[in-house]
Amino acid sequence: MFRNAALWLTVAGGLLATGAGAATVTNYRGGSTPVYSRTSYDYVPSVMKDGVYRMWWCGGIAGDYILYAEADSLSGPWHARGSTAANSYNTVFRPTGNAAQFDGIHVCDPSVIRVDATYYMYYGGYGDGTGTTMVGVASSPDGLNWTRLNGGNPIIVPARDFHTVPNQYGAGQPSVTFVNGKFYLIFTDSTGYAVDGNGGGQFVLRSSDPTFQTGVEELTATGFAPRTAANHTRHSLIGAFSVDWQYVDTNDTFAIAVDGPTTGATRVFLFNSELNQQLDQFDIAGTWTEGPAIVSRPDKHAVASSTCGTVPVDILRSVGTGDVNTWNLARSGVDLLTGRSCDQVPVGRVYEGYLIQSAGLPLTLVRDGTRLQFALAAPAQDLSRNTIGVSSDIFYRVPFGASMHSGAPVYGAAGRPAAFYLDDGRLWPVSCLEAITHNNSSIASMSVSQWDGIAKGPGLHCVK
Image 1: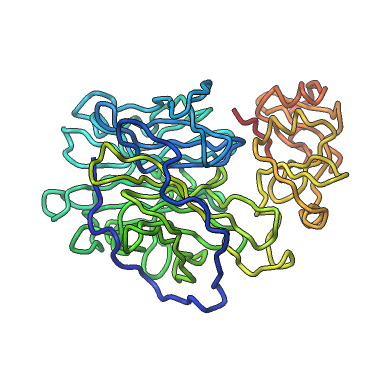
Image 2 (image 1 turned 120 degrees about the vertical axis):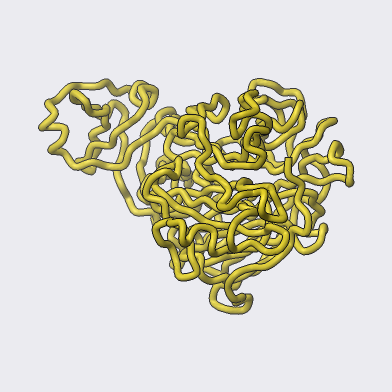
């Protein structure tokens, strides 16, 4: 278990707090009042809006386990899946129990993301046989039942011998977002070459491989480059511990939440999309004892607002006294006003994955930045849990993609997925039978050559 000390350190890049990337904040909410509390400690959560708010975090049981609860509101009550008891939880991920394995004794610091229909959890693991923290990853169809990936081996290990550095924590505290087909991973490595004297440093990798075993690029002082022994952990984006981040499509920035310079606020930095320039920063008031979570949509992008240019920024973080067993979870937040009009906002990306509703207009799924309009609500609700009301102006700013009429034809072929044939003349592959039956459709067969000869739309994935 790692407890942060001297968390606030340095930030790479220059500050343009009054430049083109500057924004203002308003509507402060929350504070230091716990929204989830137990008799044992709770800290470093990961929170997504996936219909309900879903939270995974590190909790004390007999060591560090990863726990789960959900709520209709960030203010709670938080409860286990299938329970109505406030402050209940599910234990969803445990150490292996084999002390020789990297995650045999403790698992902590979860970062959970959903890409299409698969949940990925990045976490820090510790085993007595390794003596230091390393990063692992697991996958799940529902966010509750997890399978370790990469053969149960760590995906990131300390850059140097942890015995030779002042802070022997190692590599951990991961946070992941999914941008343009790639997983972006920011993590602590107290043994990294670019850390400060306390071992503070945040390093960034990206890859289309969720296990980061192939095609890995690392953020360097001159941009992303293939990861090598020569550039690994040579460039630290922020000199701190335990950050959380998301991508903000409204102004194409990475928002990074980190424990502030005092115990009275969490600071959020905005970096440009290339991660080579800090554009702005702002504080969210409220005490903290450990790393924050920035509430995100399932792919770890900013939650959408019904107003162009406004970005809700909510965080959950641990609060409490010096006694670790009093640590609970509290919520704070602000609205980030980017100053951008609807003409300046990439509306299709902002609402990606949402069901958008506008008076007198069809229920619509935003998929690959386009509108998929439904005649029936049931198949739409199979494909997304997040619904938001928008104006007709915003609705029509999302480019039209296709309509799904009741009974729309579905075609399959040997070795090919079933796919809706929609009025745009394309096949939209679908990963689940529920959406087909709920649309009053049925699957017809065609030859592989016929199936392959039809243009393809985006894939559709049911959410569990």
